[in-house]
Image (cartoon, helix red, strand yellow):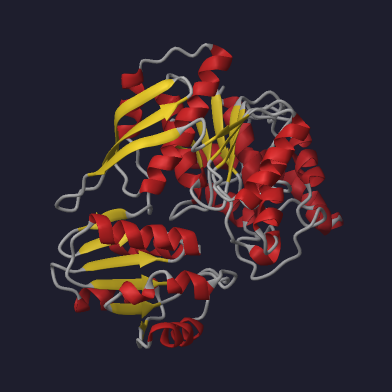
Length: 455
């Protein structure tokens, strides 16, 4: 690896960000071609080779899935850290600060370290941008590479890597992990990954490696068939939720704006009882079960001896921002970035079953590429008032499109706000102390809401 840590840093963090944002960013594009040309693992491998192949030999857990992969990644990293391992975490997107995406032991990468690593990549990337733009790495590829360099340099003992999109062609898919997790398969990014569960499962199954164990929460027979076939081809052991790992009991504990649940989870090695999660929703108990299944595999591989009480303490210390997160009381304000029909249904069911409120005021903002009709069907009938808005991301759906869809679905006439901040101001003016304001639809809306509420 090119070690330039002792050389003076000639790139500030702001300059590093400016350079990064010149790269093509598929998170901000409304449409693009999804193929081995636009999403090239060869391009990623060349970038990593330039810096010394930091991904090779990196102990890691690789996570994909239509929903829940971010929460599962955070849970996994928290458990690994509390088990005594120096633990890296790479997730996307961020809510407020880009550095949220790259963490070790729940601490974000520093501005100086980020700039230092970018400084090393800069000559290579600039050369490609000037001579062969199509071969130049993307925004997400650069961030992925920075995370791997950072984890390697900090002697990370376990890195938890969340896939950005799909799996097969994702820039994280250059690693050979110790365990692969596929949380589930649902209909999202259908214009990119395909419009059937089997086609999306094929993309997710792309992270499965030869003889590497797979833990999955897939419950669709169509999708599961693809995963099972791939595991057989790769000789990869498959551990399934509902067969090898189960949630035996869940008791939600929501009172005075606090949130959490106690659950019992059973794996093929034994039971974990009296687990407290500072989260709500049965889907989070399922995510936790996948994490504990992963932990059991690592215990078998490495003879990792950890007291179950340590695991309980780790899970009790979880912080998963914008996952049905209560951020204010009187009125209750909840942040959640549900952006599929399934996740919106989970959000609706959790709010109804576990919270008490007089009126529900929804603030909704989505990306254009979502299945808006089916997502909206899951939530708009429950709302007493609806405010539609948009994030600053170029992919944001125009409020007028949402207005028309909502009116057709439920006959309600929503209010509109040009910014997330103005939507929150409007909702607060409508709300009494007994009401609930729920802000949802995308990570970008949730991030802007967090900033607005913090100011």
